[in-house]
Amino acid sequence: MTGDVEDRREEWEGPVPVPNGANADFWAATLEGELLYQRCAECGTSQLYPRAVCTGCGAVDPAFEVSEGTGTVYTYTVCHIPGEPGFKDRTPYVVANVELTEGPRLLALVDCEPDEIEVGAPVGVTFWQVTDEAALPVFELR
Image (cartoon, rainbow, N blue to C red; front, side, top):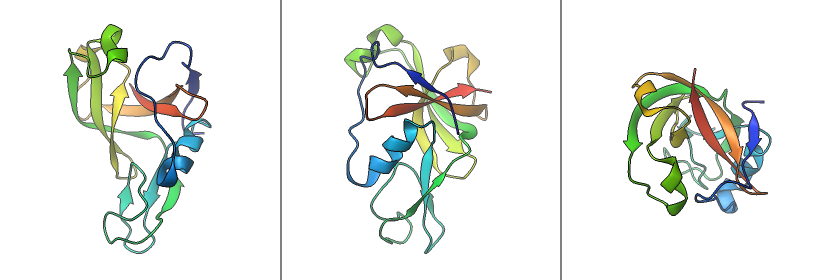
């Protein structure tokens, strides 16, 4: 298991993922505490979020692999104005571009105080279950 899954369905008021097509396996894995990424067998490109084709060479249906769920903060922003109505009570909050140990980067919430984060900080994934179909990958400082 990559990370813990915390049930936040009753309290979550933010946006929710809609699993479909190429991302359905990704979201199903989040409910099990696994962070998946894709690695192309043709060219070796790793990518996240899931897509039906490789962003490196265009090969169809790149295979999923399980991430260690660790990485570093590549860059971040502190949001003082909520981008979504459900984030109103959460401001200020941190959104980071996290570079996973396996290479791909993803944008995600970081559950920390804004003055605690810095570029290069080590992070690990945890999951907030927000619907019956999906849990959001959220990172914590390590």
